[in-house]
Image (tube, rainbow, N blue to C red; front, top):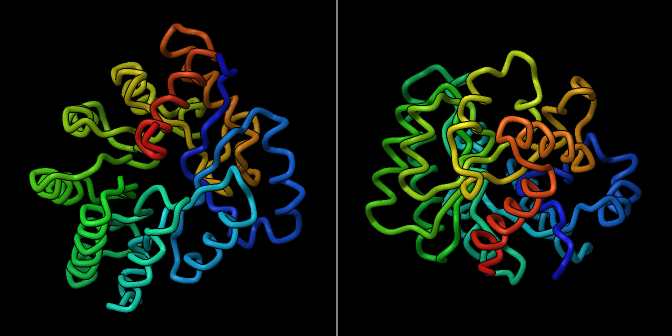
Length: 262
């Protein structure tokens, strides 16, 4: 039986925070037990960068989509580029897509975000790929849109960097979706997320960092990388009352089943 490895389901190694040492850092991953990394697009520029990373590193896969912060920049050409990239052999999801009302308070901004979120969910459906959803300060609208899409038949998905409460978690879990758990679960003040992790079946959790953001304790405030994922696995294990090894093994299986169809 193969030794379980950590499956990092959401990172941004195309980010300029890695400009100085990207190659050296990624070269360390496999010897430190990080077996798979999904580089998730956010900006329009990141589409090409993610494709290049995916081609350069055998263990790096790609999620193609545009973050809601950039929804206003999207055109039909952008959607077509996402569709074409999603057909590459190592494209595993459409993401990161969703709604973010934290910086965007105006109703017209929300409408543009919803339109582009739905357009990208439609690509996920048509290309038979799972989705990776970003949702910030937009709990109800995100849930309503995901529910509507799921009625039409989708191919699974991850609620990335899950940040809402247990009731909202139940809604997504009942749809058979996965929750992405990262560094925030190690924070002392993350009571709500710890309750969610305690409640959710381990079979519906996946590990992620959102690197270079959201470093776990004891590295909070520093640049994040997938090398910090053992801290996340350890925190989940403590909450669940199981071993870190079990968390790594089960979340790897979950991610492979969803993203690699294995």
